[in-house]
Image (tube, rainbow, N blue to C red; front, top):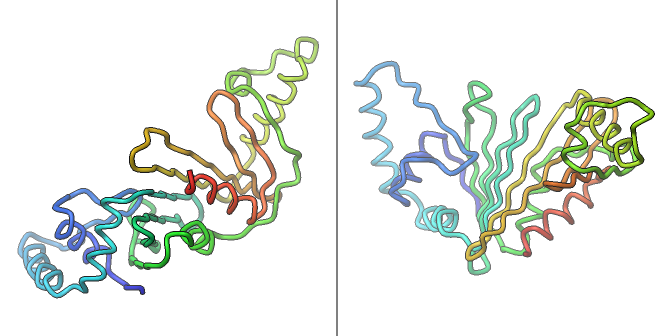
Amino acid sequence: MSWVLSSAQFASLWESVTTLDRLPYPITHRDTEPDLTAYERAQTELRHWCAGADPKLRAALDTVQHPSVRVQVYAEAATPIRLLGAARAGVATLIEQAAGPDREFGGEVRVFTGPAHAIAGSIMQALPANRPGRTTALTAHHDEVRRPDRGAVLQTVESSAATRLRQLLLRPRVCTGFVTVESAGSSATTHLTWLDVAQDGRYLLRGDDVLHAQPCDPQQLFGALEEAVGR
């Protein structure tokens, strides 16, 4: 099932279902009424709309508030990408927000429900495709990547890889995507980052102390996301 809401409708219904006045990341909304009178009138209309909202839509938002697994996706691109997925008891909710009036705030919100096992695939379908990058996979310690070059004589094999990885990270990008996966009952959080390098392609970036960047096709990104969701 699916529903299309304005960002104002989503914000109002979210508060109605959850009693929370803060929207779930990365969904955003900005009130645009010109004055207090217009704002109060809009809020009254939204409350009436919420009272008649589809119970299945309310249940979908409840899944987002109390999930077994939650997936947050935000990408900095020409048009920002905002996705929020959640699954519980075999059912998944996916929220996709279109571009809004500016880069900080989103616009129209689409809410989808489906089987939990399809959540990774549903998220992938909402992401822009890109070819794998042309640079080979690189692995280096985070501190080495951050450290300035010390000259060819002092560079080890490891620092050479760090230099190449640093250069890759400094190249112009057309998109930088961030994925966070959280599971109920676990303190572990999985972070994935993809980089769409201009005139090159896509790389998957993982790791904290040790960074690993690899050329990434859609199937590899799907596999990494599915693995994270299944943990």
